[in-house]
Image (cartoon, helix red, strand yellow):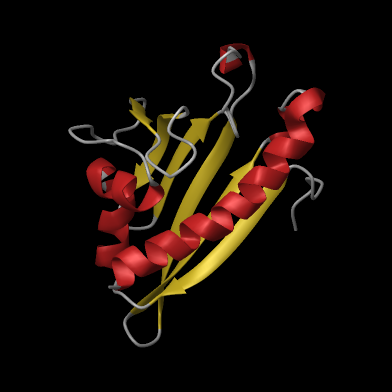
Length: 155
């Protein structure tokens, strides 16, 4: 049982009709990740300690950047990174804020399918003036992104 409050973390899961290796590739290959996530990550690589940055390509968010630092990669079970949640205002310098931690975990499921779980934690350290909106937007955002990867990897 977690001791964190429910305002500190978002957790979402989806079963993808694809083997774990396929889902892992969709997560761990930066170019492929960008395809379903909606960010231009062409030519970049996910590696621990590596910063990966690309313009958001999703309609209406082209002014924003996908900007992460890879934390851990444990093939084919876990990928995690840190980022500044809902960092969409080009006039704001988010670098002084504590980033949240996004962790994807994969588990085999019956029928050669995969359970993908994403947990984003650390919202209690986001500055109070933007914490609730970041939590709300990412809560909705993760539902949409899990649908995206489910369509992408399960195709």
